[in-house]
Image (tube, rainbow, N blue to C red; front, side, top):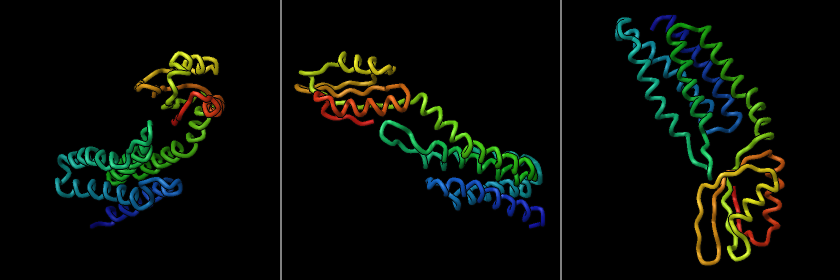
Length: 209
């Protein structure tokens, strides 16, 4: 191992740790140690691809890193209710590997710039995303109501009266009740008020989102 390789590994460790700290601070599945190991591992694979191939076809190892890291990222994606969670953490794993490959290729400045861009996306754009969520949000509701006293038309009229857009996904019926699933779109504050109104509707047996 030469000095340049050692420098690459140490820089990769630093950049991966900084990126991993952000995930660790937010208590995500892949945190400090995971992202740091991914970044350093990607750097090591890149360095070894140079040495083993004697700088010929050195891109093969990098392309396999891209493929392999996808399986690792898929492990942190899971379904939570009607939503899919873990996509941002999976993307961070993918970015950590990309930074590691960049550093392993000797492009230290590009690796640092990529880290800064990643932190901007994960931190600053989070506030932008939250603002968008306040003015326009989608919630998937599963609502069960008594079919003798309430109908799907009544439910859809209820959504319209509260200035909400909606799309029916599924419905199931039995003798006394109907269970339906709707995608509902609107402002966060309006959706919160709708939750309170649903609770107070006698015909509604249960709902969740």
